[in-house]
Length: 363
Ligand code: ZN
Image 1 (cartoon, helix red, strand yellow):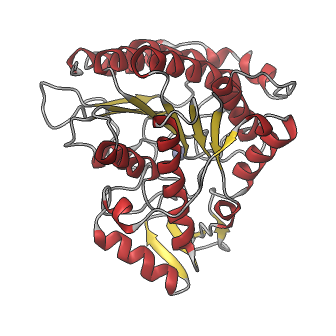
Image 2 (tube, rainbow, N blue to C red):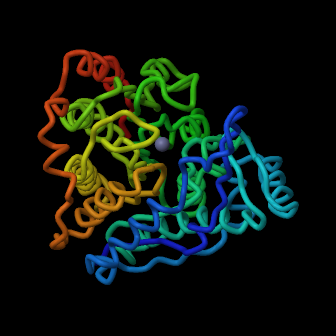
């Protein structure tokens, strides 16, 4: 079976707007089409794209979006789109006709989940724009209009034979939207690794473990700025994987932000393509242990137009079990930096999350 892949040219046409800067000329927000399009194009040029299964990209219906969102938010998106575009929330903008692109991204996430659950593909990467993990039930923010991954998870829980889903969010920002949407839903374990103190504050601390103090249904691993390869893998080995092994999910979804890279405009972490390769391998192994390998990655942030394509290629090579002849030109330089090692203050941050893993419910 192949790895599924989703992309639609209209994702690149999404108008994410400009920063409201009072004293200097308006500047486009960090979320441009560039990094995503170059990611998709490197898949093409490397020959990997031809070895993937293209997945259906179609518009999500009102009913599908409303499984995760309030009607008032959808009404605002529709009205703003028809009025020629504008702001939907804090750093959340759509252009004229943007409603269609928002629906296509959410629909692509649903189709990717369905393709994996039906056995059509082994696993899947949905390269989406706009991203989704900051969007809460009733608010768009942080370049996220609706929560694509949450909509797809709700679809699986409501319409497929799935009762336990784990979400792993490795975007450099806290997955606040996904955390809040599933806060009171014990069917979903949400785990977010992120840079401490970044958007969207407040929140993202390791003591946010869910509504019932006896049961950990949400794990946050806020890592200090500068964390690199060893810190992330330590967080995986001490928090993410033991939590997944307790929860025993029937499907693993990944909020795949590539903005924890060493070159990102919005993050100050230090990962490289082999870090993402190693994290992907660990999640594939966990998915194999618990759910026949059922793993779906939904693209989130990632703002380095030069590095994102190589990280994305590394992830999808790993998912597909294929190694192209492409060599990441940044890897050797970034991987040898001394900042890749695990430092004591990073280990302490991981320890604060690790103490909550024993309360993750077992089936
Ligand atoms: Zn992000």
